Image 1 (cartoon, helix red, strand yellow):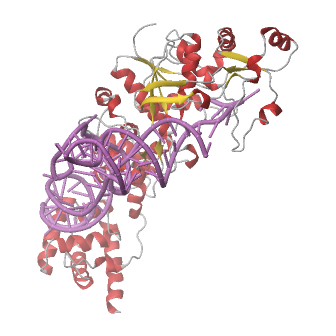
Image 2 (cartoon, rainbow, N blue to C red; image 1 turned 135 degrees about the vertical axis):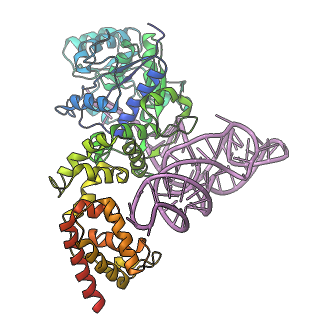
Image 3 (cartoon, rainbow, N blue to C red; image 1 turned 90 degrees about the horizontal axis):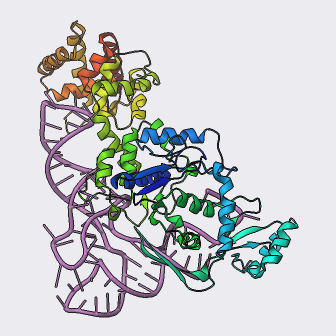
Length: 484
RNA sequence: GGCCCCAUGGUCAAGCGGUUAAGACAUCGCCCUUUCACGGCGGUAACAGGAGUUCGAUUCUCCUUGGGGUCACCA
């Protein structure tokens, strides 16, 4: 047993990784790295009911994408294996027997019927230690006779169990409020409660980092450690991430999985950065942080005790910050699959498009809707041309567009730079300000109040032929409208 | 229902007895290479309520209210 910090992340292979769960793993990782410790991955697959095929691979790939590297795990033996709970089955019964010997646990033969009879008016049931009084001889006789049995924890009938949590502080629970939980089920398999303690101890876990749902049952875990005479680990319980004030963010809502966010166009780094900030904040208020910075800044006193509501809007912002710092090449590479998924697949200059979109993209997933207008030009509401601040009216817009048609139709050097110059010419001819040309022109070409670029950039992208076609179309539309 | 825990703007949150109660996101307004966006600047907005303790409470104590968790042969 060394003094080195050892933390673990013990997910169940039940499908995609939920961000709340990932955050727990992240904190365990950050704490270990911050303290020069070891971070261990353990797969808790004892619940065959919930087991999902391929889910173990999801755990690996999620951790890899998130940049969370485990030092030990099923694929990285550190001498504390096996790291998959189902492969550890054999050891638990022996440990349980040891605990019985030490008087901290006992055999129980009570029938389901008898147990149900113990239910009180609130529907709450607490085992009455009925089998605790059985003597050794009778126990052995009944086991030999093949009677089914479980092994229960022997919680003291009186007194208080307490411990100090690293984030919640002192926690005290009356022993009388705790039940003699089952450690070994009648099928000989351990319950989670027991397996967890045995695993943590045999893997030398020094700091147990997990969700608050275990806060009040931790005294029970401690009773097991005490029963064996093992040193208790330190505990760090984490408040949940909520969907809103009353609902926990959970798999059931289907929108909280790491993979789902990646699919929507969030960069893994941004997701990790955001969830790191949910429930924890560094002393200096820094928000955008790399994994190395997170490790350097991480501290337990920055962890908050109250639940945090997941705010996707803020994560979008953080994601846009990460996108902006990408190089043009990197952005083009990331955007290309989204171009291919949009209506403009295979058309237009992706590089040019990417350059325009780069600073205007919060999440990659919104790229298709931002470029679809290139292929979807149709009748629109001409009220868009009315702009009070720019002093643009439909009439003015019509004049400008007509002049634009004349000027632009004779131009063969169709580049952004040249078009900029021509806007000046048009403005002069109509005796209006430049902005009064840019605005109507941009609207005429895109049929949309917001576009991924200015008027000339849009014209450049569309090419002369298509630009002229749209210009004509918009003029017709406006003429028809202003006549009425 | 018993027990454990939590409580600062719409959201994340700083604050650890004396502050004009930070900052970020969102929102609103203004500015900007005359249009979109980016960017810059600024505004609106909070200590759940009530008793104490104290010269003085957002900060400490208690109660109320609200919320979360937990009471399994699930993890």
